[in-house]
Length: 217
Picture (cartoon, rainbow, N blue to C red):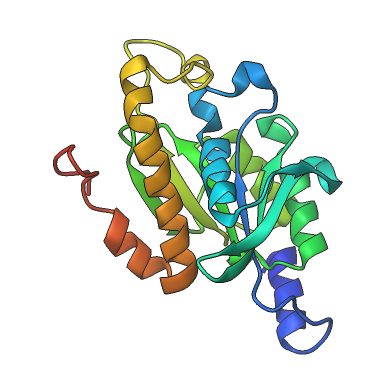
């Protein structure tokens, strides 16, 4: 059992108490205007949509992270965006988990996914990082993989383009036209996860993206 899992067990057994069911939702990305529209920053983009729904603004705070707080679909939430580069995101996420006393099973990471078609949303609990440097850093810092992930498909790079180059490219003009709708859909998935659980969210969002035909299994 990882460090966060052990802390959660102590909380449940009355060792240190809990914060009453708060969730921590973190969007992954790279800081700075030069990265803002990159495919790799779609986690930041979804987090911004969620902050607008909460009615809060991100403010730089502790642990090299920007934070917004409020209620999402009736649930108390802290929204986070690490202000480090992607491969150092673990420290800010672990710091926020400790500070807000959020166990790993109430942490939701939102990130880009190369192996899903553009706009596809998939949710899961635990699993590997699939080569994603941000997730690898988070897992290493938390000491557990058992946190939720909302994966936003960005597709594979064309031809022989290096994936590391592709993720740091902006979305295409055609993709940008669809992006606001798709970001809203990913934010909807976060709300369903918090209010109805993982199975309900998977049932609702693992079909085809509306207007795109059947999705992958």
